[in-house]
Structure formats: structure tokens, C-alpha cells
Length: 118
Image (cartoon, rainbow, N blue to C red):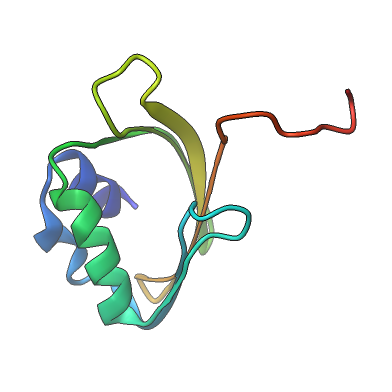
């Protein structure tokens, strides 16, 4: 998880090359409500490389918790220069034999979301 996060914070897509399993499945945070599903090593690498190389955005891990083959990455993602151009979220990761096999992204969304407490 350290190398995965460093790829984003250091803008170093080459760090991703040896981290992704052939059968990796990734779900992005958009489009809501389920996110885009990306399957396979090449497709996941292409998706993540695009994010890493986008100089108009900034990914900042806030907390990383590793428990066995699972990891939770809580993050802050800035996608513009405006005061409100950011979102917080979490990635739920699963690793097998040192390779990412699953990465599920979730974020807090803008706008009104009806809650059971309201």
C-alpha cells in the first residue's frame, strides 16, 4: 500500500507496474451510485496511471490501515483550484501474494443525499 500511495503522491506511475494482479478488479468512485468497474491488470494500470499523471489533481492519503490481506486507505482528493474542488473518500483494497486483486473506491458526494436520520 505504501508503494501504491507513493505512486500518486510522487507522481510516479512506474511504481504501479509490479503491484497489480492479472485478475485485478477496480471500482472507481464515479459515476454514482456504483462507479465504473475496471477489470484486468492492463485496464487497472491504465486507469490509475491516468490519475497519477493528471497534474490538475492531487491525491493525499490521510490514513492507511492494513489487516492481513486487506487495507483501507482514507484519502483527500483535490480536482481543481477552487475552495470546494475536493472530495474525501476511502479505498478498500485486497492483496494476494503481494499484488492488488481488488480496489473498491467510495467517496463523499456533493449535493443532497437523503438520510434516514432526516
